Amino acid sequence: MLYPVPAVLVSCQNKAGESNMITIAWTGTVCSDPPMLSISVRKNRASHSMLMETGEFVVNLPTEGMVKELDKAGVLSGKNVNKWELLHLHPEKASTVSVPLISECPVNIECKVEQVLELGSHDMFLGKVMAVHVESSLLDTKGRLQLEKAKLLSYSHGQYFSLGKCIGSFGFSVRKRK
Image (cartoon, rainbow, N blue to C red):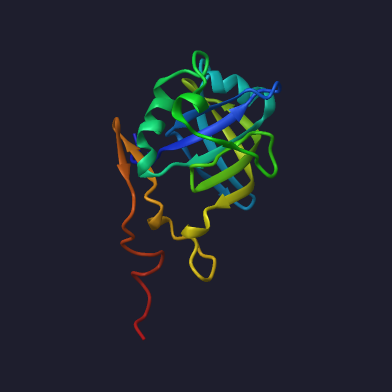
């Protein structure tokens, strides 16, 4: 398998307004125009039925200080416990979808499901990005994202890793020196 992968918290809810969150490592960007990403979820997960019911979700990017919450959200089922209360995380109103953001996460990506692909063990939800929220401390003076400051998480072979050090930027290897 291809590792490492992002480790994210996906929030979702049913039409009755009951929300849940799930830890997802099978996620990624699939298109830039229009901006789209994917999440893959097992059919037996509580969040799967919510995603199918409302067709909306939010990808929330947790920091290294949230690794326990990230792990618990992936181990415990929303069928048996209110993860918001148990993990002491706070729902925040989204701007374009009915699903709440996780306020403790510095980056939140609101999505509407465009397509569901039945792949086997997981269904892949292709989501069109409707809005992105970024904590202001992660933006430089020109409004560019500085994700190295966020200390986001990745997952590889059963372990979580913190990201942080930038070691190059796209095209740096072929730029001419001034």
